[in-house]
Amino acid sequence: MTSVVVAFIILQGRARSSSAQTFFFVSCFNSYCMKWEEWKPFYERIVRVMGYSMEDDEKAAEVLRSILIENDNYIIKEEINSIIMERVYIFGAGPNLEDEIRGRDFSDGTKIAADGATSALLKNGIIPDIVVTDLDGRIRDLLEASKKAVMVVHAHGDNIDKLPIVTNFPLVLGTCQTKPLDIIYNFGGFTDGDRAAFLAEELGAKEIILLGFDFSGKVGKWSKPWLTKHVEAWEEKRKKLEFARELIKWLAKNGKAKIFLGNKKI
Ligand SMILES: Nc1ncnc2c1ncn2[C@@H]1O[C@H](COP(=O)(O)OP(=O)(O)OP(=O)(O)O)[C@@H](O)[C@H]1O
Ligand SMILES: Nc1nc2c(c(=O)[nH]1)N=C(CO)CN2
Ligand SMILES: [Mg+2]
Image: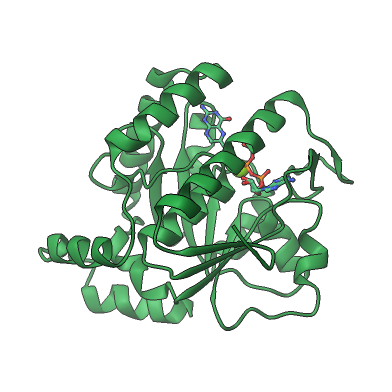
């Protein structure tokens, strides 16, 4: 799967296609594309509830942009389109993840790991095609996955110091939660898991299957490098998961793709 992307990118000669507008039209024709004006009210509420600084989030987007341009390892949205199959599996870091992946290979779809879930996939011999991360998963596993996966790296006000890690990844699609910049996208979504669902929708997935998503108040042990077992969600994480649940429900209602939580359609 990754070789398809690499071949595609080589064919493109990394020329920033002048037909990007056409691609944009085609992909938005097949999917729902969230506009900044539509995302802004969600973002303003997130900033208020979570106590984030919009200025820091904006600065983070600029920093990621500079690093990616300097390192020349960024890709544009049109370059990732080719790895999206009609069915997309998104793996979250909930306590149910390992039960939901055991004995399956997911070769009938594109596999997107949300940050911490990457470690569980690698441990179970599953290589993700795409990793969506704000760089607080186990860095060793993110580096391992990046040898085969496109890394969709999210810049925010609280991970500016970690952004230089992206220089180690061969292919990076940059995202932010503030107003998008030329090569730093905002497809909508907040946590790595729900952002992955917005990305899949934007790229034209028809069926999005969420595995390892659990909104009952427990955080899976793969969520953070220091966790050794599943734990009760702490206050900040509880709020994040509540937003994740709300945004997934919103996408199921407003997007074009069918979304499944495990085997249940939302
Ligand atoms: N019960 C759960 N525990 C942890 N993650 C979950 C759970 N249910 C769904 N997820 C999804 O799995 C994703 C990956 O988890 P991870 O904790 O690595 O992500 P994160 O968004 O970076 O969180 P944080 O900002 O707290 O670091 C989350 O973003 C979330 O969308
Ligand atoms: N400023 C800020 N933004 C975020 C944060 C975070 O910790 N701080 N975490 C996220 C992933 O859940 C997404 N966005
Ligand atoms: Mg994360």
